Length: 281
Image (tube, rainbow, N blue to C red; front, top):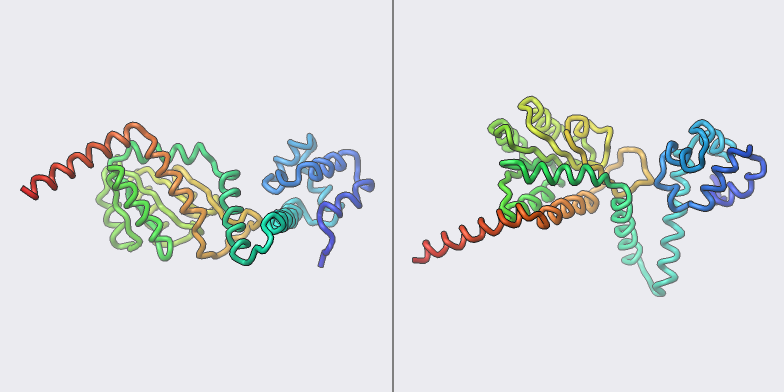
């Protein structure tokens, strides 16, 4: 098992690297916290070398490629950040560690979100007649919350984690309706079935998932990729939906700032008050 840190390893072996490989090593040492969010292409571009040179450099310092190096580097950066937080808050305990992990998830989301996709989904919601929210299992409470928030804004919607219900709603959907699917893995069968049905009806589909290469993402017109742990590249199972919930809250917050949505919400609230007043009389 490797006990030496990645940065120490790079410094130790730097002189044995070629001049172009040294450029990569120097860039990593000077920009460690940024490199943990890079792809091979990003690092090659930032170092002004080829992607093949990046791979060779990683191999020359003991890794099979860039992703293993980045994974190790990410773990080290997270460890150092946590240690710094503990020093800044003497007497910290497990609760602080957990909250620090939560903060890290939100920071990761902030750095990695495709904001063009987020804004595109917001526009689709604004333009749709009805938004059909679909999910499965323990992700269902997320769309129930989102459905409630959208309803308060005057956005007509349906939401359910029961496939027979949401498949029926999608089957009855009009051409200007939107299907918004939430699935962390992007592999939930009932959610994929719902998205496939929407596709067959030529409905617009938006997805919130952690995996760009998932079956759900492949069916969607717009995909919001949100993942809590960006140091992992495999499909991992977690019951933590902080990242998805944050993405949902972001969408709702953007809608709240829309003049058109605000006007719709005001009209709806006025109508509700008139109805209540009539009932009381």
